[in-house]
Image (cartoon, rainbow, N blue to C red; front, side, top):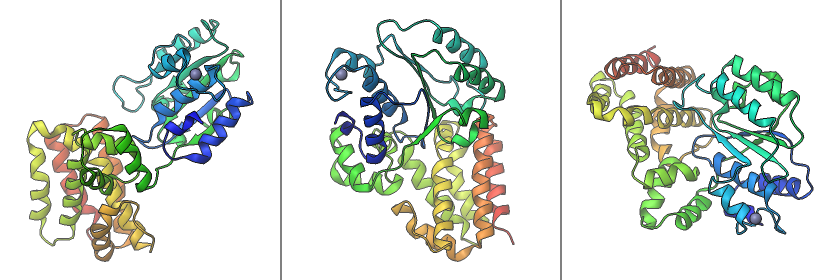
Length: 331
Ligand SMILES: [Zn+2]
């Protein structure tokens, strides 16, 4: 089966494959999953599957499949936001999509719209989208990609089928990265997987040298510093971010920091941590703090994300983060 080129998520792959083969794939799909999990790739595979005329669509070899996967097919239209921030999927874009949707496909049975970061639509944009979903042309397929389906209005959700992509096992992630990336040693791959878990996109990012690995290490250092009685430890951990060149790293810190606190909460509730590399720190945090304090720390991460999205001044952001983390664990 051609969906085999996508690692993990076997149940979802089987469902989608069967639906494509029987011509029963829903016309409005929400594809949910965390950053790096493969939503865009999976959406393109679905599109290729719908348009491919091979025996086992997507065959990955015909001109249609190659064009769809290479983002070069006139009937597969892809949209994403410019700034990747809240409310940034604009109503004007949705209106443009509507206008294009009512023009028949160029050369295929379907016209497929992939809307990346569709959860960044505000209410007005969602309502505009709803109008298309309520009366779609028969050939139109909408695939809305999002991190959290809860960002959508109930009216949108009720018109869509939700498919969710999950993390893969560490073994599958290892196998995938070995196949997809030349260069890194087995040890380097394993270290990265230990840090970020079974999210193949994040592992690849980390190995390609972006901020992921460093941000994960920093997140652990910051979390550890909170167990110290001395505020100095936290200040020291955050001092790297004072340089303006560390802005990207500071922004990349949000998710790994949240994952450490989430794992600490899991340990506090007697579950296993999700990410192996967090285990030691998670145990120490779980021993040092109450559930309430750990929830407070998670809330700080959510506020942190909002402030990043609002493009808060870097120095102010570090000062705020330092104070908010300390306040979260005060009795
Ligand atoms: Zn094909």
